[in-house]
Length: 353
Image (cartoon, rainbow, N blue to C red; front, side):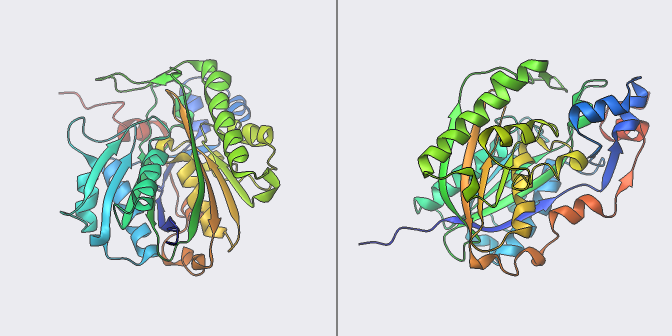
């Protein structure tokens, strides 16, 4: 009998811009009480990309770190999928530039993914499937975004920037993919039309009928499929639109605050959109031990969730130290900016003439 292919993550990497803006800076401009904002969203600051940083540059950084941890020749990567809400070009793929920068071209398949905040996990799901089917040796799934939020909108406090990259393969796997499940409906809670610079959203409608319905639907199905219970897991991570939602949905599914590693990223990073739950996964892998089981459910408006159950293997040993870890990128070498600088960086104000 042929042995089943053990497929999972063989390398991972993250990238977070050093520039940050505090909730107080944004609230001051719009005459809001920062303490009310912080209590309501449980956010304190967010990462901000500089003018020379975009989804491509951040994806390249995260991907190079994933390749370094995997210790593979980039030429062996058979697919690169970049999921984002903020691809630099409307017509020109992000994936080809990332693959070229890695030295993975020309024998490769690339595509840009779009599914709001779960575009990153969408790419991860496809890479896993292609490797599992034996069509490619390694697949690279990336979630990356830059901050997008209209002036004065609630998204200005949460929409941040970063990238998370995962290499899937079937040799020296750091974390096996044990189960996957996806849950989708047509729920228009958040959208951005062509030529619109900023996204629109349904306010409170983005909560119960959107975020909670889909993560709970996916999470409960994943537990039933795996015949596992929350206490079987060392860690869990969910999509992070703010600091409150992921903590609440974890509790609703039966996870404890100690298991939920979402909460110690979001208040200082903000919502990296397409890299939100994948970013949390990179931070978890940085601290995981062999045998740890990880429960991950993403969320993307429109709407849907991808769920994964991972088991960390012996191959994790020594790998986190090969590239910058996620938590130190949050805590160290930060540069705080004021709202004017933030608005200039994000193109909210332009020079006259």
